[in-house]
Length: 233
Image 1: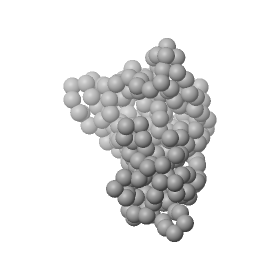
Image 2 (image 1 turned 30 degrees about the vertical axis):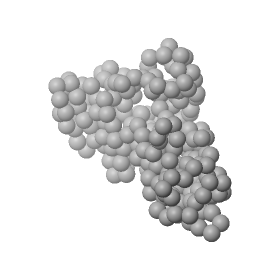
Image 3 (image 1 turned 135 degrees about the vertical axis):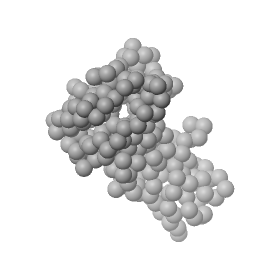
Image 4 (image 1 turned 45 degrees about the horizontal axis):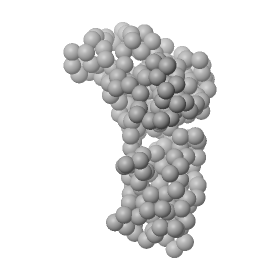
């Protein structure tokens, strides 16, 4: 399967061929730009249309290497050609929050050395967990100001694909506490000359699309774990 979103996060519609249908509602395509629920980023939603029918894509997941689309109406068969469209407002919101997460995690990692221990993107706010022993509001304010200065710098966001072996030679790519993903090819998300992180999520083309980052809360989640919530203006 060709995961189109890995190369072009702004692809809103495309045509594909159905290669598998299970229980009438779980559909696998030969190519897709629908993002599957993973890495703390929610799945995309949207529609599939074909000769004689239409359905909504209500969930997308990755199972055994296949990206499966759950649809709300039967009718699709193997070999059907479908026209797919993404709910762009939902996707773009996730792109804004995911790119902002890279900016914030880059700032906090650079200032404290902390790694990301968890994250969850949502349409209204996002949380990031860090391996920090302590954190106060004054530090948060400094992180917020530094992150927004990077956003205001209108830095380009670009992708590069490298081998797992090559990625291992660049430990700064693994800002997640669990390390690099187990994959032969690693996708690197580069934000100007500010940061590089291994990531398979969807992102903006430029930090200017993020908007203003604002912290709304932080929580002690253990001896060496702090959770931060932020919203975008």
